[in-house]
Amino acid sequence: MNNQEKQSMNEKLIGSWRLVRYKVCNKNGKVTYPLGEDADGIAIYHEDGHMSVQIMSAGRLSYAGGDLHSGPQKAVAAAANGYLAYSGSYQLDPEQATIEQNIQVSLNPNWEGDTQLRFVRFRDDQMVISSEPVFIQGERQNNEIVWERLN
Image (cartoon, rainbow, N blue to C red; front, top):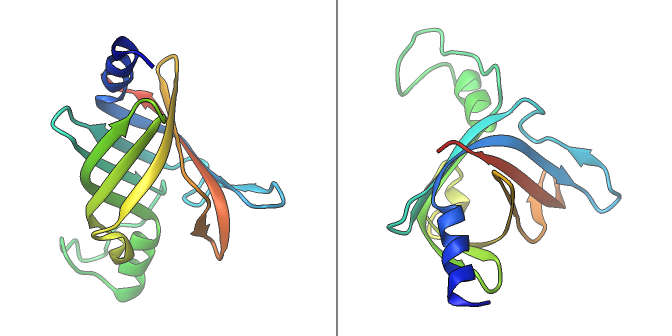
């Protein structure tokens, strides 16, 4: 890959993205949508090497009391169960078409301080992110997140 192609991939990555689809596929080929087929989300990759991803289920219920940091335990658990969030730094490897994400903060405490490898490809105004199989819904599954450019 020449320098122009490397620069082009970096330019393609930088920006804000809106979720199109988040799906997983088990070893038998069954496709599911962990946060629903109508999940919504935003990913931001900044030129300074930082990124943030937020994905949520549609139709999450509001806390009855309206308190910012607390609500009934079942409501708080349901809200967290319908949300995927993490941020940190990243390094793009255009030759391997990978992004190494260094997770600084995450809704899932298991990810804090973790480094995760993602595979990335671009088609038109979309970015497709995947990884090695991960443990989702009780089994190791392949995942694919499709984003559409916002800016």
